[in-house]
Image 1 (cartoon, rainbow, N blue to C red):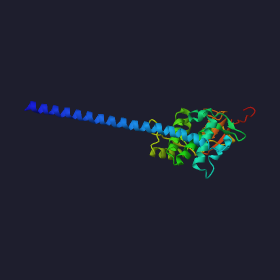
Image 2 (image 1 turned 135 degrees about the horizontal axis):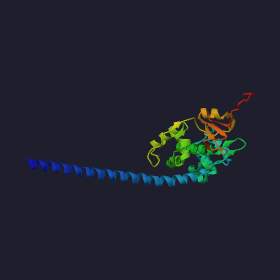
Image 3 (image 1 turned 180 degrees about the vertical axis):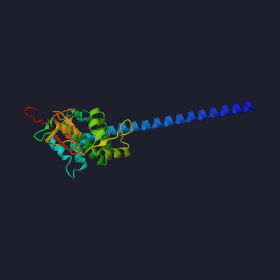
Image 4 (image 1 turned 120 degrees about the vertical axis):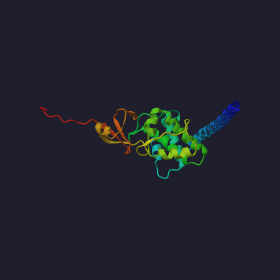
Length: 254
């Protein structure tokens, strides 16, 4: 009797192992099929997005870069024209029009003194905002690609996504709902500070100590975010100031 019971337990265990193996195999197959489906969609979306970008840039208004930037924030700007102008601006400022190269946009628009690196980040965001408003599926794929490429820049991620504008949250929710995701499957979280645009003309002065106290971002002489610099970007108020050192009054016999 004891041998029969032991044999029955062995059969049960063997059956459970077999069934578990079948379930694992089925799960692996399902995941492989899902992966294949996603990669197939990605290849198709990428090709369509590249074609759409070429078509849109050809429709951009023939404006200098600073005016293209300002056009992105005009009330009533259409989705297609906004996307076209934003993409053309990005290509004018950044090597290959690739957001990962945003720091290559060095210097300022003159005489307004608008920092080009922040304008490049505006071009990435606003192009994506307008693309997500378009009805074409390829437009969504192109928007996601732009944001992913900004993520691929460690400093771009730090300054524009990990701490991002209020517009980032709604964009991410929209892209997630449409399965427009980065390769690691989820858009990173963000601490919201201010709203778009990032860039603004340099106006006024702020002391170095005040800039530190208000957690402003310093900009170097080329307009790029830096640990120290000639300018201070007040993200909460959307303003950029020149930085001055506090003057200490000196008295005789002090």
